[in-house]
Amino acid sequence: MRFSVMCSTAFVSVCAGAGLCAISTVANAQAQIERLGWPTVARDSSDPYVRYTSPGQCEQAARRLFDQYWRDKRADTIRYTPETDSVPAPVLLATRQCAARFSAATVEPRELLDLAYLYLWTQQDDLARAAMARLERTNANRSTTDRAWPLYLYVKGLLQARPGRLREVRTAMQQLDAVGASAATWRLFAHNLYASYAVMINDLGTAESEARAALTASHQMSFPDRVDWAGDIQTTYFTLTTPVSMTRGGPVALAVLDTAVTDLSPLRPAGSGDQQEIRDGIRRRRTPLAALGKHGLPPVHATTWFGTNGDTTRPRRGVATLLISTPSSCDGGCYPMFATIQRLHATYGDRLDIVLMTATRGFFRDQLILSPTAEADSSGNYYTRFLQLPVALAVESTSFAYAPDGRRQNTQVVNARSYPFDRPAIFLDPSGTVRWVGEVSPYDERLLDGVIRSSVEYLKHAAR
Image (tube, rainbow, N blue to C red; front, side, top):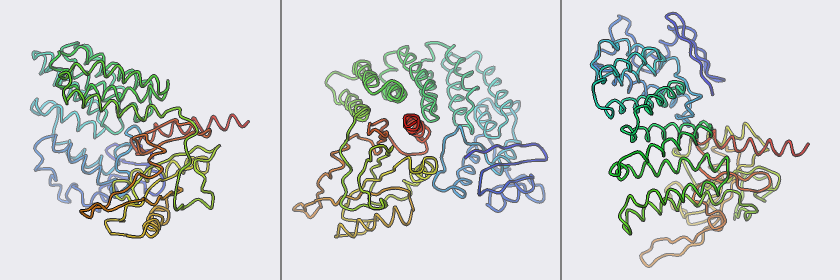
């Protein structure tokens, strides 16, 4: 869903797609703010932000208003890909009212970074640059580390803006890299943030180059700093495996993890638990990468099927398949996944078969259910009737026994043994080959969509 917001002193418009009314005037936007109970200009022209004494408070208010807007409009997808997000007109208007209390020329230097963030929220990028320019002048005589720190934070703010300001990010990154080795830690953080963002918007080339730039910076850090930030360096290696695996395959990504073991192990005492923890984390990361390219996986097992129209063979040859492991009931925490499923189905229809795999646990929604059949029916009603998800639901009855103390002990189900990829979702192309293993969420949606699209397009051209 895309938003474009045009603002002037007399006109505010928002295009939010089907189902959202256009706001054609400031007065209408103001009326909507009042209906939602948000801060607004009082009828007597008194200042509604009189208690806000810093731009940081306004910036925090903007985030709250943004989340509240989407909670009211799209409760299952409050957070979505930043490249396609913009600030809705009511939030923009309210935030500009708050920002008008401050200026880059008058706030204390310690407030300039928050002010720059606030201006990004209000889509006043020129003012954001002015705030950062004054901050740079203020810090001119400070150490290179002190100058690099706000630059890194500004990169973070640019990536969190709606939409992300990628041109500004690249400019700020050049400034940060120009500081050199003395800013290596902050360069590690900034490049890794940009790499993660690029993965999220499915820009795999940028994701790889930024992750490698982050690792280059990590090798310029002092040994004590590398010890302190070993976890962040490890995260960078993990980030790098995603674009590498998608563009060059699992074996090349596994080689990245081999390098990570060599690079990170010396940062912990030999044979220590801390060193083993690093190696265990990397080992767990290997599992889904090793699955990429596997072919001919076992069929999905189920005691009871729902939503199949009688065809219970999954995966089906010639059909792209997304397999998702899920609890027998999953509520608020799964709403973003449910929304992603709905959007993928709307895009691909019958060309993508989405299969939820679950198993009985002896209870449903914290209620004890002794009958596996009754629990399976509860899951089927929940996913396919109440939520109306366009999926095939495979429910396995779990074998179990009771321990002497009365606790139930479940046996591992067949699907958990057939698909042991340490991630809840697997995408198989129409030939039955594993092309992606990960999470189904708005943050991973662009990447997953790219993988599905390439597989579906390949099948369409091959059929000609």
